[in-house]
Length: 173
Image 1: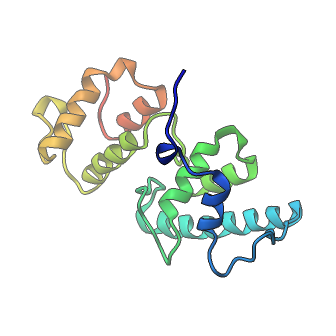
Image 2: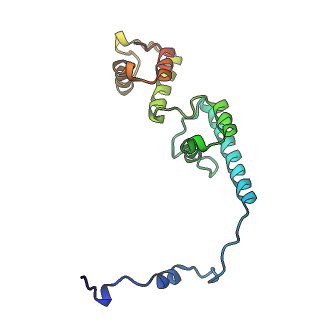
């Protein structure tokens, strides 16, 4: 039904492949195959390195709500932790427990954004500020005050653990 003239046809894939090879590559020489034991060792080393960085971050900040872009010594800690969260049930129990030992809320069932804002409210409360809904959340910034107000408004729809965390800073039904 359709006819495409030769100048407008896509180039053959074989030509594209030869054009993308770098000068250092020897054509036809495949990358060495790694055994499953080597892959497992690399994965274990990557997890150990990530856990070391996570431990340092948790010791400094008191939580593992690491921003996605956070990097330390060339290691993308935020991305690594995001990948651990994304692994979900495929993450081994040992690894999950190692992260939970650093922060029991490292992988909440709600968004990490909610967790980060909660941690801001917690820091405000820990600094001695009085967080009272009836008073309009004195001492809180306008954004944080709005967020706290919204938590009061949607309190009954929050996860029970979120309600427990909010109760620790004085927010209840």
